[in-house]
Amino acid sequence: MSSDEAAEGVVHFAQALLAHGGDAIVGADASGVIRVWNDAASRLFGYPAEDAIGRPVDIIVPEAMRNDHVGGMRRLIRGEPARLIGKLLELPAQRADGEVFPTEMRISAWGKGEDMVFAAVVRDASERRRIEDRLQSLAMFDQLTLLPNRTRFIERLNEALAGSGRAATLLMVDLDRFSDLNDIEGHEIGDEILRDTALKLKRIAAAFHGEAAGEPGVVGRLGSNAFGLLLPGTSNLAVVFSVAESVRSALLQGCAIRDRVLKATASIGIAVAPEHGSSAVRLMANADFALRRAKSEGCDCRQMFSSSHRQEVAARRALDADLRQAATHGQFELFFQPQVRLEDGALTGAETLLRWRHPTRGLLSPAQFLDVLAGSAAAATVGDWILNTACARAEQWRAALGGHFRIGVNLFEAQFAREDIDTAVARALRVTGLPADSLEIEITENIFTASDDVAVARVRRLRDLGVRIAFDDFGTGYASLNLLKRYPITRLKIDRSFVRNISEAPEDEAIVDLVLSLGKRFGLDVIAEGIERRDQEEHLSRMGCREGQGFLYGRPMPAEEFGRLFVNAGAASDHAAVRRSSS
Image (cartoon, rainbow, N blue to C red; front, side, top):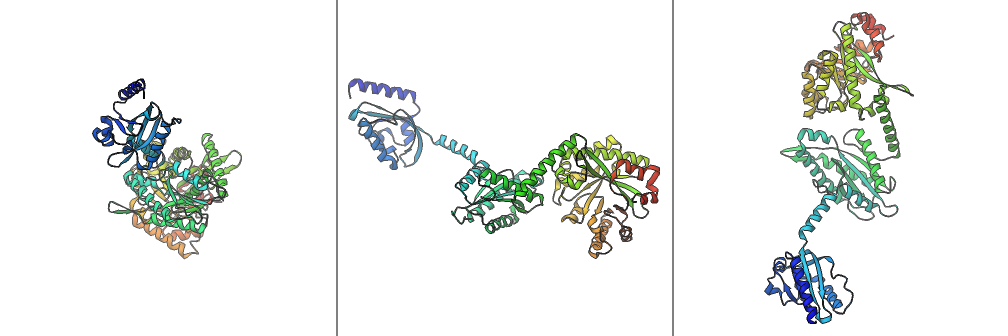
């Protein structure tokens, strides 16, 4: 190397040292021997300068890369194009203790042939790599369960479906009533349940191997309490249902938390590729359709997708849109069905029932729209309108009848789920002037469960207002007896299914007798629904039932007709007037 070239090299090297004072500087000659080694290089690689200078630069090159490193230097010396010189590179390096770590490195070279000198400015990239890995983890994995998140799970699903006609099955697993569990037990317990569920699903996935590819299953967290379980390489329904049953059994084992075992159930929607879709988007959508159907059937249910699900969902969406229009344009009407004292037929109250005056289909009964309305965004608004309108009408009738009248109003689940439900009821009573004990809130078992402390507290606040609480359809559910112990219920309503054949079916008579006995034991009023014939009335009366409701006394009718038949001329005390209303 000429003196000018050497001087130029020294200048460049000095500039590099000044520009990168905090970075490791390593210089080597054409033979690959280290000639320059700063303090930062000692700290980074673990060699003191006296141990590094004079040794081959290979001491900082990982063993697996040394042949490539030597070859690259020889190509430069031969004058071949330098592809890496002057560029910022990400390369592994090796410390004195043998640890290989990532670096950012920029290599420079001066001179020609055997007179060339090389210098590298090196920075430890371990922290940056850790940050990148963490960001990658945040982007692709759920941090609570450490499962692939929705984005990563869909990528895995796409990989499983890659190629024409690839078989795969997707199970969407959604924990039942998880929001209630969070409300009752707290989010910390809810998180434990989610982690336990993730672990159980991972074990089930690891035990599965598709018949064709031998790939294990994949689990991902798709939402708050929703998981995906992918079974690559299989569309065998016997295998699929076996896996679904394994999920069910695993969850029913429960999760041990703080000396308790909390059990969970899940609804499962299933879609099979390629039959139900050959893309991740379609398979996810169809599994979600099946999941909604499973949840509509209650807890702990599974459902396989069918094309009818999509049609039903489309119809429900159209109906939901119509219902929102109905709420906006005042198309709902209230009908009322009389409730009477069986002893003399005197009017005691009425149940409020909803009807929809559809602009093209005419008057629709609740069976045609109520399920969709209950799950609609309009449910709470319509429910509040029902409550206020019914209370206002009841106060008019109560005043006309001399103060003896009770109105029954059903609450939507969306209303009951609100923390301020008691405030809404109190406001309706205050605005309409109806006394609290003239209002009876009717609640069914699907609104509250025996373990729901939040629901218990809400019912107690309603009861503290003086409002009556009726348990509708009593005897048809599973938790009824436990509910009597926990909830401040004031009346039981015997379901019409037990009244229909009470004179001929000993089993129905036994159930009615049990309900009446429970009412007496717990100090609750009892009313029988669905009375259509005089023999049913007489049978119930002999058994000790004091009140009834049904077509024998009157079908549900508009407010004007109810007022004319049962309120005008003091019909509350006129037995014959009530009887004539059924003709």
